[in-house]
Length: 126
Image (cartoon, rainbow, N blue to C red; front, side, top):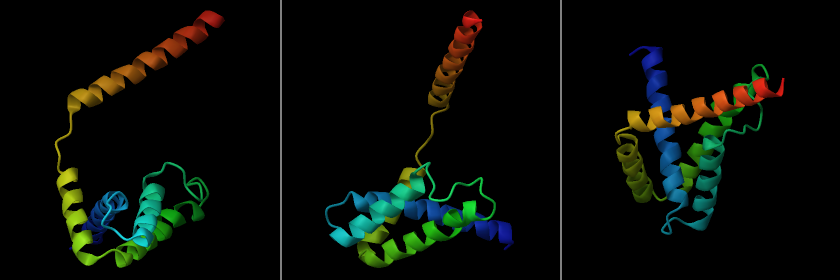
């Protein structure tokens, strides 16, 4: 197995675990300390705001390569194993859901219309 295939598998497992932690943070069977940790890790991993912005050389990707995986490891260790297995299964099923190309086209059309309106508005101002 090549390093690229290993990296893809690792990234896929990280994505699954983040989604599983999101489900765990919303489940009432999870102990409060595990729920708090899972919610914080999932929120940070899914948030577009980084602790260290990505444009900073080397340090920008440090949070993505260290903080998120270490947070996932901590949250998984705090989680009861049967519950974590259940949440991972749910995350895998959720990720396999079909996607809608029509929905994507609709959203893109809305963005294009907004962009066109903004350009037209700027054109009218000059």
